[in-house]
Length: 486
Image 1 (cartoon, rainbow, N blue to C red):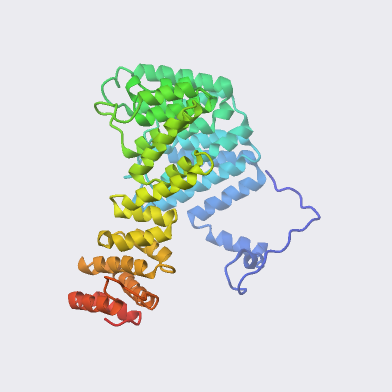
Image 2: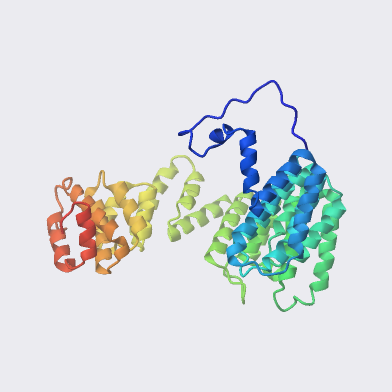
């Protein structure tokens, strides 16, 4: 693993930034190798710095030595069972990640040794996380990074597929923190058909051995094995194997039926996908498998795709329009309009805007008209239904006001007023600064408004605020800080 001999082509000097005393790579290079070596040797009293230097020296001289050094450290970590104090977690994670990165470096010269070491590192995950009060955090992140990076190493190593499958099984057996499912997909290519078959057979045997335990209650270990089998099925494109990992009652739930249907559609089995979705339609389930809004949305998306794939375009269009009328979904409306014959889309768009204007929920109607966009309609909506503006929804109110202020200052002003009144009425101190800025914005917009109609002008609005909320000193201070007067 020695450094390659220098070539005649010199690398361009690193650009210097800042003064000569700025801590940068270019300035440190100027210190020279002897001075830097002396500094690093002096710093080596720090255990982490010492370990970094030792690993770097091994990396430059011998891949076998580097592998041995990493292996020794992993063995030491594996023998320890004491709790890892919260103050030491960052340092422990830093050390662990150092060895993970050095394994990746080792892979450049000896991928086989690197793969074994990365699997050894993953072996430490569960016993190490058991030593923590909570698994989330920098230490867990190191194991996730090792899991996600192992596929590239395995592709270079070309391991024995059966041995690799057995190592994966070992990890899954001890996967108390459900971290190793993605390993199956990451290593599927390295496993090949032989390794995948061996892994599948082994997992099915282990799952069968646990079936009696999980007949009437949730079994976390069985869930891990099933997840691995599903990932194997996806890797090989076997939709039937994927479906077989779910119990019959689960296949009739919206979320699972949608997952199965998407795979059937990708495999060109549109009729099977449609039948699967029909069996898992929302609202048809009984008992504990009730569908959530998110699950229902996933099912609906798959159903629309299945209907189109099986030639039921009119039914798909009908569902899209019904969904739009219920939710004012812009993606649904765009898909509906795209599916109409030429010139019919203009009339349908006008009809959709009419639906939005009559929609019972003002916030959803405003969000649609502003996002579509149809700003004239949004302005008319605000003026006609100003009493329904919810000043608590500052995200929508502010965005809508920004979009409307140029051409429709009165509508923008009414939105800002609703936000200001909500903040002051309910004493939302965290939004006092925002409300002060909005009041000044409303003042600037007043010069653009020729006729307030039925609404009070800016001076009258401010006078009413002062009479009602004059004692709110926090708001007054924020406004005065911006140069305003209350």
